[in-house]
Length: 296
Image (cartoon, rainbow, N blue to C red):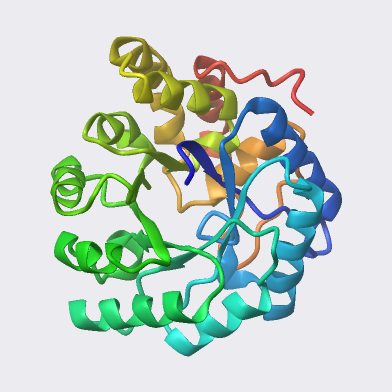
């Protein structure tokens, strides 16, 4: 499937709180130019909980239209309702779509058997491969390596976005699955050691701001050039930090707006990035090599 830097894309809104498709085109074109491996849309960073069902469906279709096969697009269609996740996946189905991403059910705290049956039912029902998404910091429920390994045998489940930031967890999963099962870090802070532990790339928030740098870091790491990758990683760590001083995607939407790619609008219950962090964010972006003068 995909290796390298898969960017968890922000969803741009205009001043009237509507999806801004002009800015979306600018974003997609930017990532194509910068060498991003794939776009993961309508996920956590894409504010999917704030999208109406009709918006979600239109957003996927419009992104695919803009991408025009220049870059793979994966659509987040997860829910804590198995039925609703299947229904939404079918509603956005499109031959141009590369895959679906489905998150561990949140709030209702399923057992490991419940998670296995949830994801198996989704994978049985859809026409494209499914990427599992484990992020216990948001969902509370944590999908264990043994459950991931059971699901890895499903012909329509191709990998996992593992966002615990635990490298021992990555090694444990790696030991239980075959080499064709794709492992992606869901944590920018530990993306490099995750790849060193056998991962295939990262589903990245920081890649919204520094896509060229994330792509190069992944390229070097996947080629075994870890010393060179570490130098890039060190330059990116201040950015990683500033992107998580408030709830994602509050900081990243502000940073991308500073680059002139989108307007700085975010939907409630999230609120605008606190002004006290602005200067530190600008400094971190510059340290990462982001050109604030000539982006858009």
